[in-house]
Image (cartoon, rainbow, N blue to C red):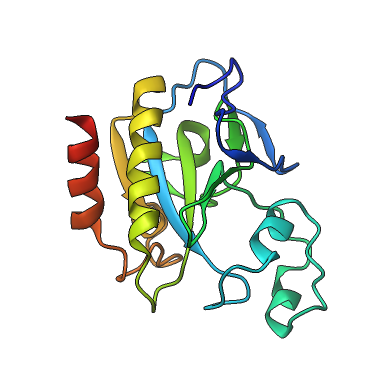
Length: 182
């Protein structure tokens, strides 16, 4: 797996999202933000996330989707319940994943971060294969970009977001990350 000049990773599924723009000039990627998402909420393996990130979600297809009308969001990567990785935005571009956010006094986290969504929710554990894929992807990103910090969406948008949630096992993730670097 290698990155091209724009930040597209080979060996993963690519579904280009229109929801991105340029990073500010001379802004290095130094933060990795871990999210969770399921559409509809608490349901997995449907097309909802891909459709949301590509602006093709039929907002009449589920009662919850009505609140997503006109929403334009994306992430750089999505890790499905089966561990499959999809890239939506090149890492050299700014994906629209963090919203109003602040990390260590620095606002607008989208400017200097890469966002990884895990298919999941606050109330159900994540799958072991997701942690393995996340650790592998994180290591690859750390070799390519000067990532100094890894955090959850809730930590950069406190009071507004809860993901990846209490069911995300940080200890398991960091243990796998440590092992993958050996």
